[in-house]
Image (cartoon, rainbow, N blue to C red; front, top):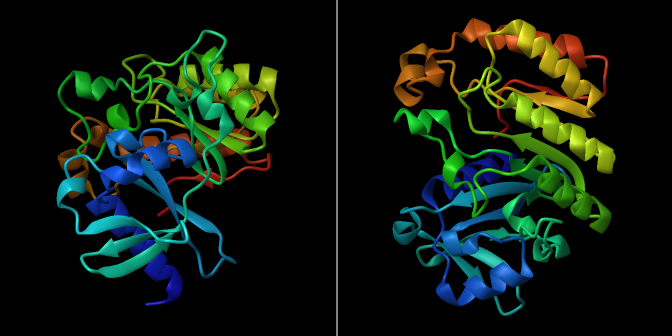
Length: 289
């Protein structure tokens, strides 16, 4: 196993098993580090990549019920560094990003900014514009999905308030690019229309690369229209994740989303490429490990 494989496996271990967080660390993590939702067992830790000059690889921890039984525990050393231990042995060093000042600010409407968007890796701010998933509402959510529990956030967010938060993060110098995603909505655009509107308002405030992440829309005329609007709104990157190619598993783990034909994804990727290929952007079909 090479060193990069080792880091990727550690990330997978942290995210799948969860991490015990000692109660005495909660206050320090919440006020001193990038952990606004630590009280709910959610936080981002970073691992150093040995193949990329120490580049930090984020691992998003959602403990849920796993944290209480996880063999992994967060430890603060005497030098105020943090480590993860497995049982009675050190498992890995971790790096925690500092607490950004905008977390302690509110929008013009008085909403706490840390409930609207958060830092998920160095320079990267992420917001889930709407966390109320239609598939949850009809009792058929994807088995792996935590969108309604992603972090201690407002489940529904106004685009203008997200823009307030993005602007504050950019002005502070801790935000270099934005990703916007959404739960699947029961609308024609499945929520993509709200992402485009949010990107448009952000562009009116600051210039920053924006990624939109969404589910395929089988109305290709609407998809074409929304993606062209997104490009005008300053969006540089499109992400449409199929999650799983295995037809024997897709509907088992994704009761509704798994019924979307693979061909629909391929057509969506093709349409995205047609509209964004001439721009300086990434074209992602699957989530990075």
